[in-house]
Image (cartoon, rainbow over all chains, first blue to last red; front, side, top):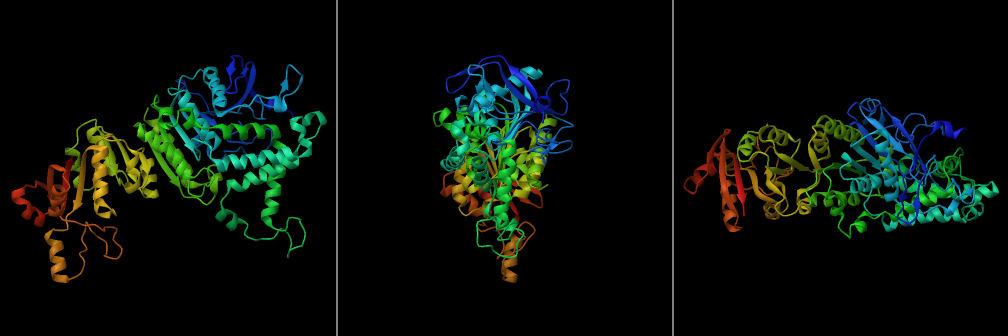
Length: 372
Length: 198
């Protein structure tokens, strides 16, 4: 596959000081757009992707040839209606779909950065993406929208750039990554590091990839994206193409086979070092601490209208963590709406065909847009 | 639209900050935006009704008034409205206290259990009254703390909050409740509307 010719890239010349202290400049930010920017340039929505997402939000992803990660929500007449809105999405820095990340070549050593790549944060990610506004000549976005890590970017974006968006929709996220979520991320990172092929992140030198470790990381994470009830209903104890247990360690159960499949397709599209860097960025995210324990202060300068959405069966970013954001916004009299969507599909609900969620998202955006 | 909405609207100043607690489908919110250009938020417990409010473009927070009012700072609204919901709370006194903490004023409306038709129903039939405003049977009613207009007036005295305006509704016709006509209004009206403050 020729990755480059399918990927639009903005070269960011302006230096960006990262939270780790290092400064980067002349780095690529890969992005994609959908729909058309109107004459007033006031119909743009910046979508932020989650841990393993990329800029190819909807339609067929030209690299993986599969449906974009948010095809249910974004497209003509969909919740984020590309007939109406101009949707921009960038691959986060640290990622592996064209934006500056650990698989890029270090100009000093002429070798892949690997773990020499600077540790990046959610703050760094949005500070890189703000450059897209200048590039498109957009003074103010109509909305910033994202789920999971995308939601964290929404919160950080509004905090950093309070007058750059009219509305903000953080979905299934948190203002401060929990111990449980750090634990799950650490499990994934350790699975990668335990793969002999990882070679301290220098696997490209050996022309190998730590695919076993990355697959295990994905399998473990995937369980956290679902719910017990959802898993039980979909798989139960159903057996995989066999009538009885085989008394061995093959995938007897459908759930085992499903997870192995999820792991195997993931390694084809994702870079192990990027997985380390992006999970680290999530773990470091603590907007509450950034504002000395008072989350409200993160939003004190914004007039943006917020709409926060959580899901009943999401145990990774549970309703209470989403509600904490609502409470912080109400404490300063910000304009905030909140809904908890009933769904058995766990954290993944925001990516799936969950009618009540898509309806609420569409109604919020379309009604807010018509208010202008 | 409930007949009381027009009276609630008359109690509210233009361009004020309003919270509608238990806002249902947002009919009152819509009406107040149109009539009084208020900046209004709603709290509603039913997911279906929350969706209906979002579809109307209203700012709505899914939540339970008994738990979720505490997040609002003191006096953050000019008016907090509680329309025919007080009787459904486990602890109405606590809710009233919260309304008066977060609102400069509160508007509370109550179905009057002292209404003569209700009294007659219990007197003649000997069963728990079922009326148009109170359509549920005793075993499935959400209304666990019903009271009369007189009860509410006594309650305000016992708990030291001021009734700035007390209005009785009888066949959709409003009239003022005074100390001198309290017994009469308590008998003849099906609804009480109170503007309260502390």
